[in-house]
Image (cartoon, rainbow, N blue to C red):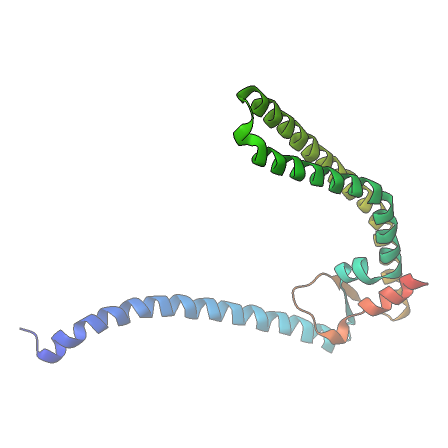
Length: 192
């Protein structure tokens, strides 16, 4: 026979046992993450102790903020402006025809309703095809322009690494100490 204390606390014991399993999993995960962080810190501190000079470059920022990237983006947008305006016009046309159809549908004969639905469907398919083609052409052109910028950026990174005696330059890391970020130097080098 169980005592009143045992009866009252047996439910909390099951919760505590289940909680301890979850706690062990969480504790194991936290311990693993801590070991990874400490291991990374040990590698960096070992590299620094040995006199290794490390730098970091944010490629996304270079492709967004550098002079050549801004010029390329403006060039591409101006090249595709006419097609973009045509797509906007076609979208407006489709929208107004769909609204007109919705308004007129109750008084249209069945054959007229089917005919206008088919016209709207064809216009919509044409618009979707043109948007897809536009996006593919835009992306292809953007990739062409930006691949040249990436090449120039890599050359600038190599020059900076040689001039300032960097042993390692990392691109696109998860977390970075701003002290080793040389992105601004690369952007300045590309600006010339």
